[in-house]
Length: 80
Image (tube, rainbow, N blue to C red):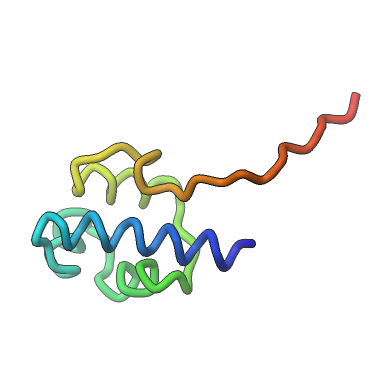
């Protein structure tokens, strides 16, 4: 499940970035995030912090929710 989530997250980021005609280097500079991390993130091989996702979404001109994969996993019931 985590691997699929990371891959879809990476595809969403890459799709928005390339749609804007932005290179990984440009995204790295505008977010102050290392380009190699952005590359690994787009390939779905690393996890990202919420802080990094906020920086990336700001640079891409979207909300974080726009790049987070949509899931249909059932929510677990909270124990009372």
